[in-house]
Image (cartoon, rainbow, N blue to C red; front, side, top):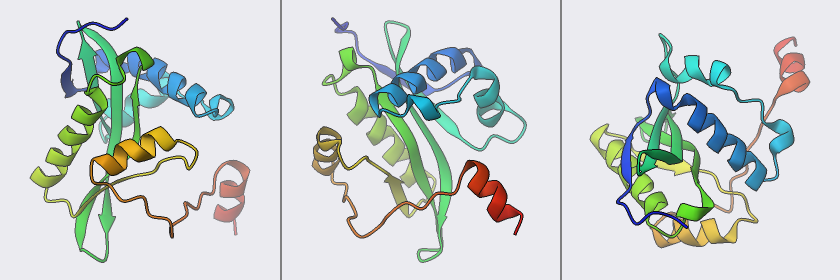
Length: 163
């Protein structure tokens, strides 16, 4: 059972790395992608807190425990000629779902996007995750049926780079 305490949203700090990694692993398991998950505090830390961070992270805390995270970065829209905010992953522990924590994280990110002059706030959702799709649509998001994600990774990335 979850606490009735008000969740606190804040920027992640180095001390949160282990908790964030644990939440990422839980997300990978939920998405049935654990076999692809290679995250560790040592691998993630430099990208969040190193001299040239490439991602940012918000955490949701309840009673001092990190129970949610949102990892995001800046992208760019050539059509709008403006930066955008891209949400890579958002995860709320099951015991804390339905408390408004996920919605609060998304609202916080939308506010950040507006403050930063972004033209878009985007993310992807798995086509089988109907609960998430309904949740996002309820917040005003459009699920774009005409777009597909293209990805090159691992050996295929190395091969493409070597051409």
